[in-house]
Image (cartoon, rainbow, N blue to C red; front, side, top):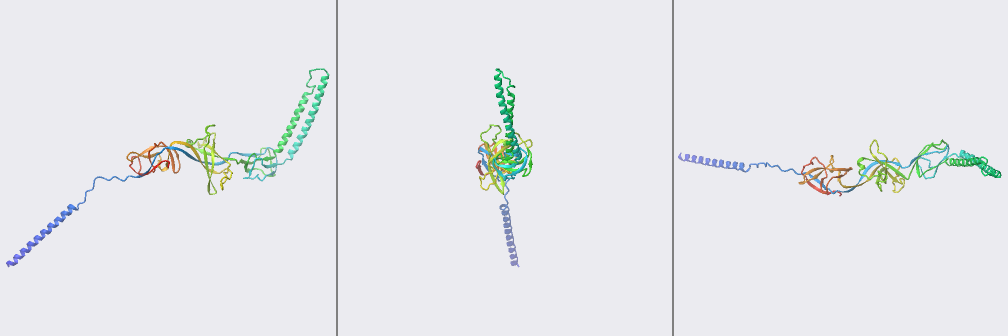
Length: 398
């Protein structure tokens, strides 16, 4: 019995020892996890956000000749109504007396009946002969009167006795008769209507068999040596051009390039500004410059159509040189005519500029100093004071 009790006591002691060791190990593991596995405290300092990337251009002010764009309609420089100076029935017309036909100066376009004018010449010629006869008779009577007066032995002769008034009347009557012959011949010549210049018939108003009176319009014609285009110029564009505003203001006039679409293709003609209209348009307040193109119907370029009246064209006028101007992408200019430039620390600053010319993809401005770094794009992230990072650097004019 004593042996059994001793054995039980020893087992109980061992169990307590094992439990104590296990509890101690578990406690050490928990402490280690608490101390080592504790998450790090977050840093109270926030990281700086990344700066926006921008492309910049280094400004290099230079001289630019800016092209001004406008548009207009082609018209002939010389367009007239062909008018009959005499009356008569249209007897014949030439092959060129049709709308769209070309003709040369002096070509006979239309012929009126001549019979009445031939009769008038015959009558005038007869009256001239009668007047010449009367003049010869009066000259003879004048000589006879002078001899008779001399035989009377007097030195002072009476004009009426010498038939001086009658002689003068006969002389003037002969001059009048000759003038009547010349007038009849001129009227006969005017029955043939001739072209006053090289041109084209735009519209005819009469035809064979029709009677026309003096002053009747026979046709509408225009000269083909030159055409012109009235180009509206706004006040802002006017400052960019060297136009002939005064009679002798400039020696050379600005060049102009005209562009039109014809037959599905785009064609160009070279011209020159030659003058400015005498007054400003009261409705649009625009000044109209007049561009002229010589030989608009010549075939200098193969396949190019003629520059016919009525054709709508776009025009580019070469402007006068603008000093200290800068060409920029249109994206660099903001709506309030300012640009963003980089200051110290690559921070943005708004800079007002003078807008000289705007096109779809380019702008020309003035008011930027040489060496300034100008931002080339716009974004809601870019404003005055924003710090940025430069991605690419360009130079203006390249």
